[in-house]
Length: 367
Ligand code: KG4
Ligand code: ZN
Image 1 (spheres, rainbow, N blue to C red):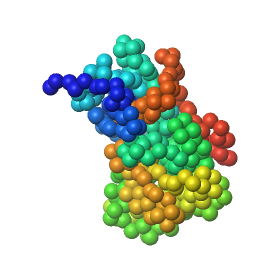
Image 2: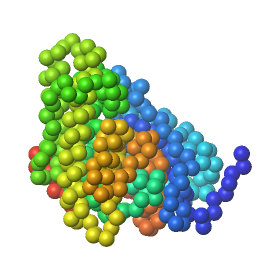
Image 3: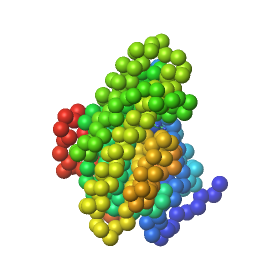
Image 4: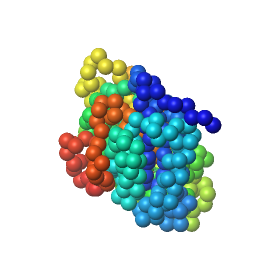
């Protein structure tokens, strides 16, 4: 097929690479001169089959799997977008946070392409990419209130602009996705856990078990899921061996408990954000990250936002979980501001979005 030449006046064309965890991904995104996004290609290959025997992501296996397929996926993304490397305006890769081996694979690949093609390089913050996805999918611009729920992070943030985040709350122990994954493992539901728990919960009775609603009513805006996980384990141990209906009921009760906890935290965050955001600014509430794919959570948060006068936004399910379109888009947004990175930019396995946020009291390594 003949390539359609990209004209610079149309906007900027960015190749994005994502390798921070267990998905290898490459995508090409166009950011128009008006600041709107268009996904020209978005290729994702999950590594679940490789990690399944271990019941979780094994960092070394993940890094090797990224090495094996990133070049092929990059070629696929370029072909699907029908563009040449010479057409690109920038190359972006996730620089952190994430698993160090995988981050190195993506970052070095993007740097080499940038060097060989004399292109600007963009070291993207994975959480910023989740945070800005609604700009790509809906053209929504900050400021907005954001609930970021992924496998490694659970945060409430005010997004004021690209690179400008105020963290209102975080988890003091497990991330929400991690809690789903651990609960799935406990219930023998396999990996990845979030979708498996959601599926099992559909046929379950959420009222059969009286699980705790962590942090509900607490003043500070943090989350905690470790105690809930223990409560599920205790309930499961009492019933062992578990029948299919027990598993479904426990999954439903777990999902209902985390939803109640998250709703309470978000309601409080909306009150705080209302007081802090510019009074004339439209009030938007955004949910992003892998757990934002959860139907019960989406429905409940949408209702909460409506009741509080916030417009509700959540990316389509395939763009909630890890992908490279969001990395390319975050790169394009930074490129538009002239914020490129040097070729010696380091990987940053730990990298808070809000550098000024104080550690949450009692927080473990996830804060
Ligand atoms: O954002 P993401 O793809 O990767 C990270 O940056 O961590 O999030 C992955 C997390 C996993 O913990 C996965 O179990 C969870 O998102 N997840 C879900 C659902 N789909 C993915 N959790 C609950 N319900 C889902 N439908
Ligand atoms: Zn993610």
